[in-house]
Amino acid sequence: LAGAFIANDYLLILDRFLLGVVTVTVMVSVTSLIADLFKGEARMKMIAWQGMSVELGGVLFLAIGGVLGEINWQFPFYIYLVAIFSLVLVIKFIPKVKHIKIEKNKENSSTKENRREVKLIFTAALLAMMLFFIVYVTLPLYLAKAFDFTESKIGYYMAFISLMAILMASQMPKVVKVFGEQKTVSIGFIFFMFGYLLLAIFVNLPLLILTAVFIGVGFGLTIPLLNHMMIEASTIQTQGKNLGLYSMGVFGGQFLSTFILYISDNYMAIYSIATVLSVLISSILFYLFQKLSNPKTENNLLTFEENILIVNESMEE
Image 1 (cartoon, rainbow, N blue to C red):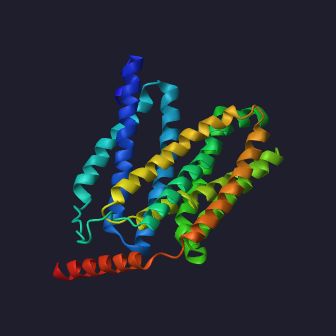
Image 2: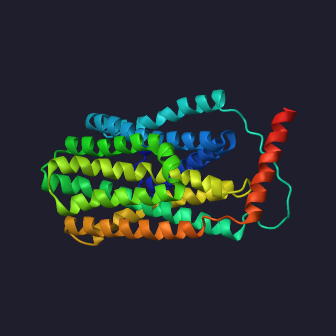
Image 3: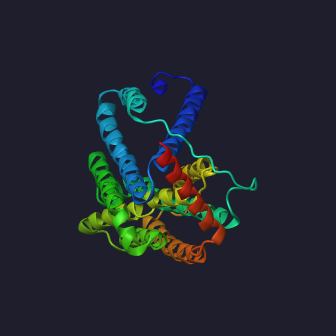
């Protein structure tokens, strides 16, 4: 909220920096709570709901912020007051979690293979968010130039992309049941490819709608699922660190997407490059995930040990 009243540029930068810090803190904490309170299929469904809520929050924030911004430039900052309401909900409804302590060798709790998987998931999240955010960086300029869209029409179109992402995130667990987690991630990047291919080849309004569908599906099959995969690849001891790493990947991807405009002034060239990148990333991830598809015996033993301790604690309660 303070951003509406700070006139000094340096204080404003510091204020926005602190906002970024607490944003990541909240995101990591929420994901950790989901990991602690839910298991198995229920956890994946909650991660899907989390992905839906993130996108829906962005849609509502942008829509309401746009209306308030037309009245007064300071008014959109008041949306942050919703944090007070959220704090009340956290205190009243979210239960405290008793962490299960697992005694084992004092070596690093993640095996070498798990560390490789964590790094691969981090990279996939970074690249997925980079590809997704290219549309947010380029389309407002491209739509105004190629289709003569007004600011409001651009806003509606961007909101439609987010809506498609929300719908696909809700269906992500069903897709995973059919194809498995690793193949679903690769399929998500293929949908990014379809979306950017249409932008690179055609300048057509109906196909523009199809582009939004493809890009939204790409998000729904990658970002929420990779979040769940990061939890599954982590042990109790490394979960917080790895979820922080995942958030770095997500925000890092948003940051990297801004550099796409330095490649060319030709939007067709930009979308062609994004198309090629999507195919390459999908293929490479598919290959690397396949190499990690056979976990070591010690990892399976640890998972079994965790499950036994969880059952014992439940029986004691």
